[in-house]
Length: 164
Image (cartoon, rainbow, N blue to C red; front, side, top):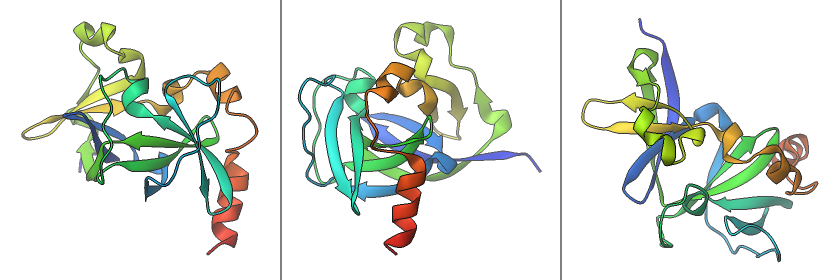
């Protein structure tokens, strides 16, 4: 039986992306976001998630997609990046997929100019493809450090357990 990867599939614009399900703590409706002065434009701000402050990144801006897209389908993927809990705003979350490892190929070379540093591979499905993101590369070390002390994974997980 072929080995499979489980990924959360989401959309930005009309493109399908996936991230390893093990990196997703939860998916939430976009609450009120507090802007933080003098931060990169892709850092949308911070939210209060069950008493913990979580930095939120607009993945559309980070991946350099044009325009802004806010509607009721938007979601925040609460994820773990380099041992930090970070929220990623996406246009829509579609499903959880199981993709055969043998169906995953490296990104084509022509994609190099369009953010290939964030993409670990291309998952081939029957009727579509899905770009697989490497969350550890979505933010570099300096950007992670710039998120401050909030978002510590252990603090977040402790709060999630204590608030149940």
